[in-house]
Image (cartoon, rainbow, N blue to C red):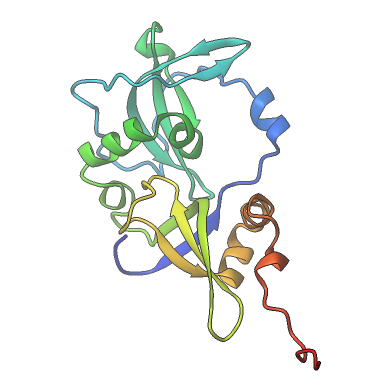
Length: 198
């Protein structure tokens, strides 16, 4: 994922209720001062069965048109919705696009010359946790967690192993969700104490 200065962030916290109830606005595409100068427009929009809930209706992503980095260092993508004019494209969070249209997102970044080069021309590299995939117990105690980052597939070479303390500081909600999904952190801890004598 490149060299240089790196900052890690968890996915911006949104409750499931907030995510489900928020309806996208349809602003005219504008450029933000933090937005990279060069935007990659897919020549042939990928057709993937991607769905976005919009006031009860389901819309499919036709193409990803542009991207911009926000003040919190997260990324929004300009989405052209199937059946809608391109003028009604909306800005959507990268993590939401990855959740429903990961292949389309990865193809977009590939055509843009790679996510790192498209986003981090002069800034420090910034990564947001998308999902925790696995864990390993460290020999000296604690855990290492395999992390998938927003904008990257869950394949070898794109995920990293991070100390649990680091993940807890950057994405505590995702860490808690992960441990709950695998039966709780305590179920993976070694039992301490003396062995029983017969």
